[in-house]
Length: 220
Ligand code: DX5
Ligand code: ZN
Image (tube, rainbow, N blue to C red; front, side):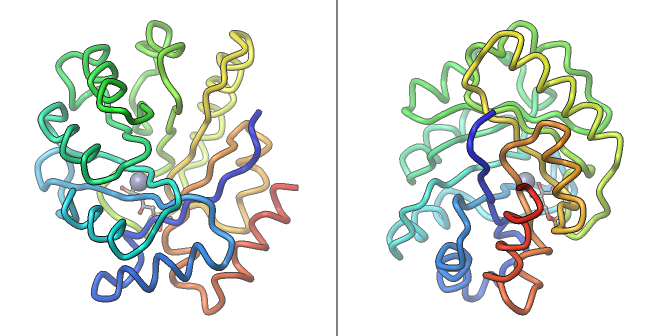
């Protein structure tokens, strides 16, 4: 298991002051920036794209940017995110016709690659591609919106992926996304996650630093 990473989801930030909010979360102890891309097609919501990512880089955000693509199709937007300065690009297997090819495209573009599993999506394809991935993301809500409640079934799924990663002794990160709070993050870490996305828990907190510290303390 790798050192814990807290990745605030900027979906819960104030888009009118995105640079300041993102910088504030990083200054308060966050490790990565989680960048949620929604297309009103694969998910019923619409957010931000490569131009906004590029603006964050121009603004001076140098932390890893963890792009969570909730878009369909996936492939044609990958090079744009790579050029804009993405560090890691994750996608949903249902949104790609050829999962192995999309992983290759992401890596050829110079980014790390992640695969995302919705609450009711089977982990079957992981068997074939786990060794090519840098990250597996387990959704603990149905994708599309921030501020939803953590689905406890995700814990069992995290335990299963943790076993797969450990059995094969792979340097793959295990990320969780949706409804993560300082209250439940301890149990989520115990289930095997090492990378934690939190949107509303961080950006709706009065004190980002205290919230992130409480999360780190609960992970132990
Ligand atoms: C949901 C997004 C999440 C979301 C998490 O589709 O992928 O990253 O912003 O927000 P919270 O932490 O508020 O559930
Ligand atoms: Zn996300």
